[in-house]
Image (tube, rainbow over the protein chains, first blue to last red):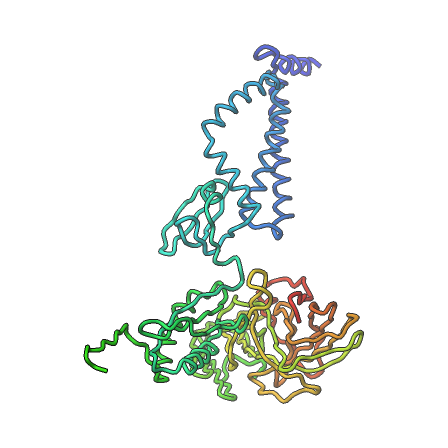
Length: 273
Length: 234
């Protein structure tokens, strides 16, 4: 009985004005419970959304859920250690303005990051050009997007810049088109050249059957009859196909006796008819 | 060619050569198909070699397509509210697997057929498919066994109008391939609209046939979707 009285006496002992040891215990318990609840909720959110949303979005959602619960617990607990919630809100408001001004860019990047995650103009692994930077998207974080440029350099772009720039996403669609301009000599048979190219393109697995390649005479130029070859390929393979086929077309045309001329000019001497 | 073999075997058929031999645990794997040769070293105490037909969407590069589009040589027109059956040919890709009690590992895939890809749907929303052209056969057609398989198609028109079909798209994920001397699949096509149909596969093993190794199941991928919806035209 005496011990119990002693414990109550100790717990009710005021450390500062109006704050007892018991209040401190309650504060710690509330914060600890909110952390435990936050961890449990985060785990369940992860399990529930693992298959449904991309990894980067999931990490963001997890963090928002986790810290919201902890902040909520903290707000409930803070009056126990003598802080008035209204005073805290006023102080928080003033601090918010100061921090807001100081972290304007960070907030802008954060909000842009959230919009990027919602709108999804780019995904991890996509080949993209953002402004004047081109490469493969390696990560989309809350504040920045990282890209490995085509020549292997790591670039971190603030999300605000990503959001306000023109974005070219080369993998957003299943297929994409590229084209070649090929000049053949005036004396060569353009129909035969088209047939040779068509046959060659038919042999390549990644030159799509549909939409079918288009090959046609585009221009009767100064030194050559210019053919245009338009080819559709899977977006993931187009670059390899593009680099491979031009030389193969040149070789196939030469093999078929079709000349690819140098620029030339016919000069007529004065006095000749 | 198709079947289960000990890890000491030489198989030669129609221009394809597969050989696995060696003393003790270290075996040498060799395969020749057309002008392509593959050599690998395998360390195995037990285990078997399986040579089986696999979903024909893996070559020349895995991951390009997950669907097979079969273009019909002649359009097929079906009356409203009737069912019919016919046969198609499909391209065969041959997978070589090492199998023991715990695991299945694919060590090689090859084909004798021409590989060609196409787009089903629009460039914005469509999908890349392995392309193949087949005639329609009333009865089981004769096939080059290591190049072509037989696909039975049970088709049902649930739409109120006549429907013309020029192509059929099948998801590799849903395919159930069986084999004896040749590869075989049994598919279902249900037409819902003039431009929309569903394709699915029969999973029951036909008599005198064996079930092939499913690449997706071998990789531990759970199969949930059972049907593919052709929503960008027939």
